[in-house]
Image (cartoon, rainbow, N blue to C red; front, side):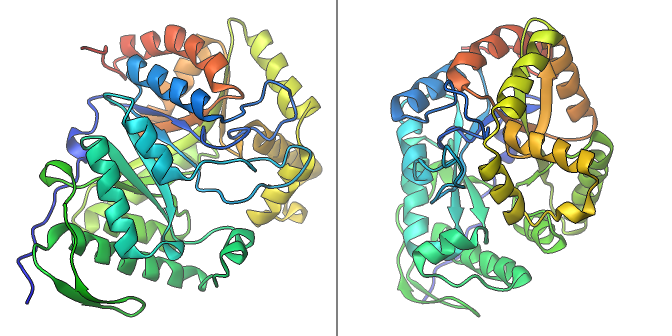
Length: 376
């Protein structure tokens, strides 16, 4: 016998009052998002992550988003080769912060849904409702090989992800034991207590960029995390995504990712970007990363391909924000004007560079009406 299914509301409406949500991206991985050999690159030590989370929390940042990574990309630095598992990482940071939402990033095919549902609820209670779930339906074959797991055909991965999430949602919503019989997943006599914190459910994010990935997000997620290649293309992506979600009777926030070099002068910012992303790029790691993203160099002119490689060295292919506080704030304003609800970004060294962003860029965004002044 099964109990009634309560529908737990999403927290997206109460998540943040800021018109443009801001998050720090990739701090759980060595080198963060910058495939560079410079000595000051991010080490991703636990104490550094904890200090950064507290700093972001006190500054009024909205979220921290980790990368789900199990092996590095090679090269001289083995880019992103030392990483924290993201659910336990989130638990540690949530226990030491007050406002910040902390996401995990979980590969659905590698984690059993009964185990995952319990993990997520535990993290959610530690954070008193500040936990978020970023679902990955399939990615690096090298990592799946580590687990001895077969990757499904591309679109089938999202079918599995939808069924995996459905099973978890039922565990969060049903009060009595139940069976679950799906195409991929079969469960008997499931019990799942406690439920998520406060009678609502964690925010759910996905970063699928294919038609199947976007369909998954617009049917099941609160946030779609999209690459931003240009502001015009980004605005089109936002319009199409929100229209597709609306057709499904849902609302969705579209976020993008970038990397930041913010300095008092444009010359200083440009010179540092050239130093770390061109003079000291970890090119073996960059080329491995590009190949795994299935970018065919024959489709690009040599000039286009070099620009792409620099962007991957600078911040994993994210949107570059390189310049003065006025320039960076202006770019973020354009991101908002394009319709994006949020931007997650990285630095070469988060602890060294975030304080300047906090002191110079956040007040500008407040004056632009994109951020609200933090209140205790």
